[in-house]
View 1: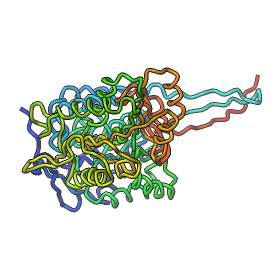
View 2 (view 1 turned 60 degrees about the vertical axis):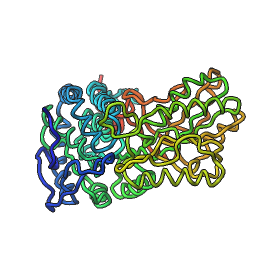
View 3 (view 1 turned 180 degrees about the vertical axis):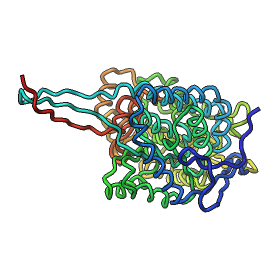
View 4 (view 1 turned 45 degrees about the horizontal axis):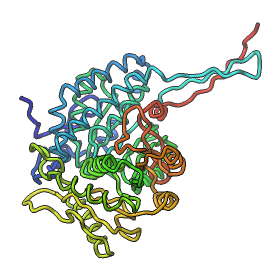
Length: 484
């Protein structure tokens, strides 16, 4: 029977090793506050070694044919499916989400490897009509070179493979810096890549508690030609400034403040189920979770009652236990932020319909599923991303009003709207200032679709045929001397 290792090592250039400093740190289970495992505490020396190894492996990996690179990705995906229970257990232990969600994320993570295993064969060039009969214009696409991925704790497997899949398929090597809160899933993926036959040096996984120092080392190294980051807008801006010094390509998937709009003509039961799915995925700790729920006044009471009843049936507890559908938040600071948002709303006139407190428990970073009504734009829940299980419901009267309110934010990652009016479906698709739109769909993410935001929610896209374009450079060849 498989058992979780209590002492992990870094994966640097195809070798398992401790940090240069010899230091280690604990990974904590947010449901029990117990130590799950210890991990080497990497620093700049370790990340530099990983970059050295990636640079040394880059030429050979770029020259490996796309079909062979795809076979390795396919084998890795198959191993993830075979070991879904083990990988899901690791994820639940370190991140807290219920096992059912963890299993779903492993399948979702594997889907990016499967998709890009095939998409790597389709990095097509072009021929362009020349202005001279003696010349030909050719366009090639080549891997950008060494890349880096800086990934968050809320999707500890999928946020890696969504970056890793296209990078490897395009012929790029990659250094991965996962969150220090959830490093175990990343290291388990490294084991799978090694077993799948990935050449040494092509991928490294380096984790440490001094994220700014590690990030700075990545950003100032000219050999790292592309960085993909998922995290807060504030950190994204720092990385963007640092990227300027070496003119790196960057893609950023940053914060969100997603509106979820329900019109009076919508299927209310479907809207409620989708709102719950969007709001409660990962305990609400996702950048695309519904944060501001706008409901047309004619159906706001019905929607609020059904949403409260549905959330009230969800079971809070340790994600490893049977029947649990709401796990803990990631750390004490997350619980404090959620409670601060709820208390601020109440102080400014909102009403708690459901929840609004931490469940009685001796251990763990839990917060009860919460519904608040009578919410207005002055409340913190409407100004900041709550990142927790709080459904803030706001009534609205007409379409123009709600579009203006939904767009009144510096963020533009995901938005959702529910209506039976096909004209309205297209009007909102064009007028809502967001990169991802769920029209009668609260769960739009999939490997074959482009994921990313506008405004201060980021740059670039991940997934789909567009995602692999982030990892290639375009070369133009003007071929002369063509004589008849």
